[in-house]
Length: 232
Image 1 (cartoon, rainbow, N blue to C red):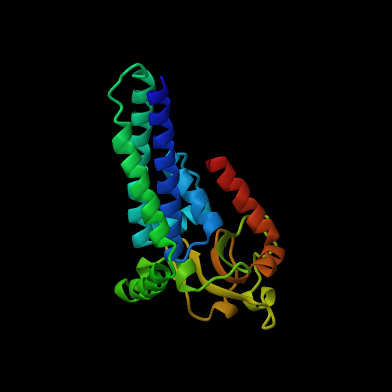
Image 2: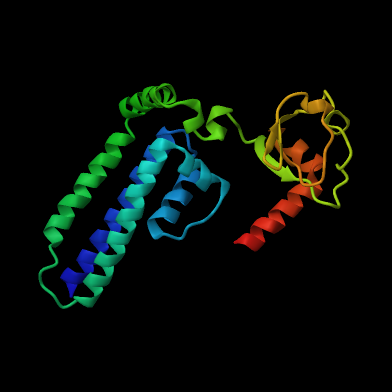
């Protein structure tokens, strides 16, 4: 019985080490620890949280590869744990081999935390930006967003106060908000945006200060949130 419990304990240690290594690797691509850890656990457990950060993972070529490995490892780990519990009386649980794996992963985790690796990772991040076209990278990375910035879109509903107004009547020169483009049906409007009049059904793509956007377009953002919650 002790051998079986040791096996399961060692495997959970392996899972914890894989999580920490994946978090560090995602940090190397520019993700913050609190976001990357949540996403790693989500991918590993196949819970599939559809957050904005999940889109940032999907849209990034390197993060997608890390995510693919975590998904496969999570499915494999679930099978191993179920198998070990069902075979709890078996003597052939290979705890010695698992111990070596734990030690190896712990060494890898220690290595990725060294200053030399972190310096190399910053160089790698620069190479990623050069190796991939701008359109292949997440928009948050391209625009160098910080915590106070927001890229979002709003859909102008039939009860919106924006209908009939021009962009320059809604967003003044002093506002820290930019219009990226307006999508009207299949047409994307990019020219003379601030002279454009808002129509019902328009999808307006915004970039700027998060608080200002949330204050100025509160009704539209609330409607968007309700629609997303219904979709989930």
